[in-house]
Length: 248
Image (cartoon, rainbow, N blue to C red; front, side, top):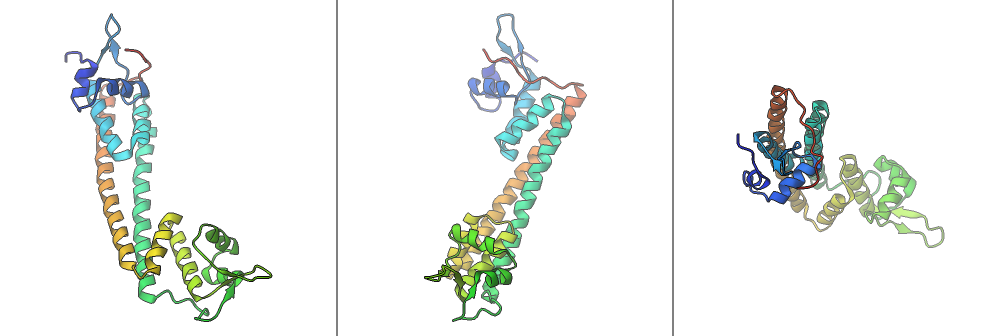
């Protein structure tokens, strides 16, 4: 194959020559040979590396895609596959979290979050509230600092008291934290439930689940491209070294 210039290689995927050079400098591409005058000379190996790199970026994200390509070019297929495994595991974790949260919100909506022994008009102190929720009192204090709870405070002792409404929030937060939800997500759920909008919370989670599904398909495509690239590297009996030339 005729040697390609950065502009020629860039045209294969629609990127600029400067971005091609950047890809080589950081390690997305193996090092290019140089002409006697110092210009880069790319080959079909670089065309394939660029195609795979773009696919990995779409499926894994920039940072992980770069880790994979650097590992492949260094001949460390185990490290490359470990990154791919981590990407799939993260998507699995997100999908499981969303499914668990959907079940939690549906259960909360269906049962109206009945809290045992804390009826309307009654209050409990922080120790009893934590015991009912199955968490430590320190967790309730931390959730309060995050703005998720607003217990009443005794004017003299500053003791915390949780009424029926606050215990509902305690239970919801405990359920969502157990499902691995972050505080910004919990706030959104609490806001929707407080304004009688559980359907909106469910719709948002369904949308998030569809987003994860799309990401999973992209990641699967990226892993397929990685498999092909690893096979190609084996056939060539290399690793190809990461570029270390930083000039034209």
